[in-house]
Length: 143
Image 1 (tube, rainbow, N blue to C red):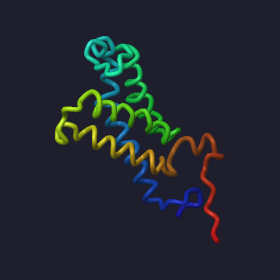
Image 2: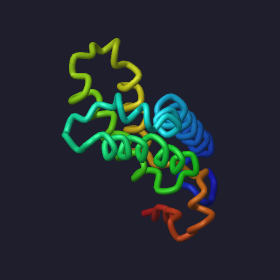
Image 3: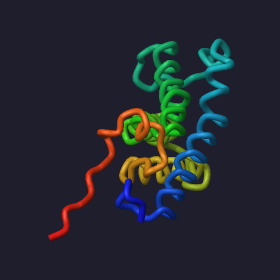
Image 4: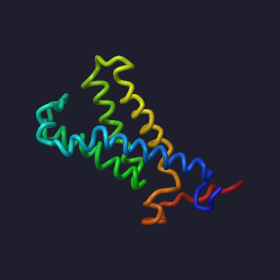
């Protein structure tokens, strides 16, 4: 075990791998296309809550671009998972309720990955540990 983390190194590496790969996948498949093709996306984005296309697209870009970048760095990682989970749930429950499990499997996998990261946290290998050492978890007190 590392002196900085209560987790074994292999788990810290696994969390880094899962965090970075899931974030890059979301960014590449959903986030960057929305950001780079903003005008055309405004015409096709679903607006299940009547917020208007610009705000709905802005919220989706926040969740699918900014939050994955925070996850890659490991900065505010648990909080960054929440908007992603919200967008995934909105897509599954309100936008595409007709999807079968097979049709929605990508969203379900992402929900599982980001839900797991929200529960587990970013692990020891993250940028915020270098920026704000006080956020490093204290060692557990042995009885």
